[in-house]
Length: 274
Length: 274
Image 1 (cartoon, rainbow over the protein chains, first blue to last red):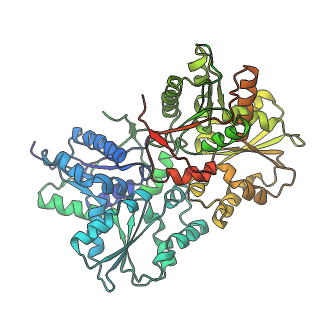
Image 2: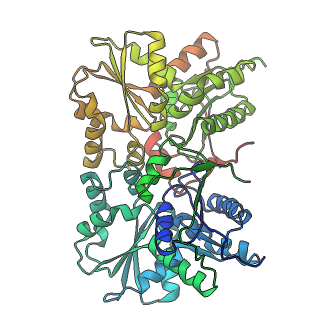
Image 3: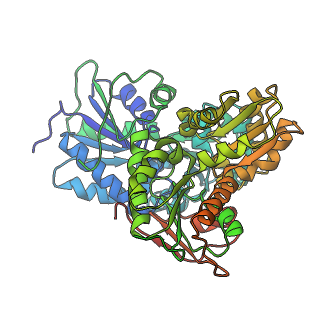
């Protein structure tokens, strides 16, 4: 099938956090139609095994391919860590590019002017445990030291709407303590929820030259590059947004507002595999 | 099938928290063989829809029935809230009693000497949102006022091993604030993780006459009553413990120790439905 510039971009996440990627794509590629899938029946992925995460990612990718998307963005760090190259292979024959937040975030961090050649990464247990950011960074530049730390409490704190509280600050002080003497050039927010903590992180780390790398912005920028190169940009003024979830948690509408900055009006519930 | 006193007790939870029930059963019924199922591939249930929770509960119940258990304990408050009576009906023909933590916890709270006829309940969003404890209490005594509060951050804090920290204390101060002027007679810990916060809760609530009702102890006591009445107590000296999970999270062994107070050596991974 020849790709069509009118086709939508498929974006997926284990839950709702990937809406930060949707927000960045809407800002950088306003004409694109977006189909979002959030696996709210099976969230969170961060505590599951690699095999289970891969199986779920295959099901969602197949769903998006059936929706005839022209590109797939893996908005979930946990999935990107466990399955990015497998998903690229799975849809390669269909000529659909697959981009993941980890590769995009790693590249963006390497573009930060580097004094100390030191990059920090924070993420879920699964993302950090996989070593995927270290691998992605050191494949491109072996001289960089990577320091990473799993921060499992940050997602539930963000979802409680407590990102600006003193509880969040104390939690960050514990999680980020090992970074204080590392003179990091960049810190990658390796989870789609973490941009909500940007100000608190900068204040806790007290490092004026530190650059925060938000993988949501990084992947949206990369998507724009790839679509431009392939002449697949949708030039309409404003694209549509279709939102699918595998289960409708009570808090979906509320949380969507927290992440997207506006309400998601229509959400369709579907069961996987389709 | 005639029930056999040598048959095991089936206990299940959405994840690992139900091991607090296992611990109570081991203490009160030391001769019983126990088969535990933790749905670690799909944990947490607390943010899922009632329909999804019921479907998962049916699958697990069917698994335990195939294992020929003589009794089933729903160690998950979220499942008990969403599906207790449905599960009772599902296995009624097989003559297998099903007990849930909510009914057991509500009965135990009503046995606390009552000065103010006020009971508090804390639990997950799904448990509190279901109103199941209120319903179970007020069906038995309409004069009791029930005050409830969802505490979604407590499970991740417990699983981080931070139940004794200042962060846990501040979180409890926020969650329990509305209880401070209520002169509660009893507070039901409506989630299997919450016994880990017992001391902090007592210290935050500053109510010397408050009784904490731990639903794990309540359901174990109820199980002993039912088995005694049906002459189904296993009189061997020490029962066996078989542990099944639907996915093996990296932290399972570590967390099992946190809940059970001892290591779980052998864990079998199975996929549902079987």
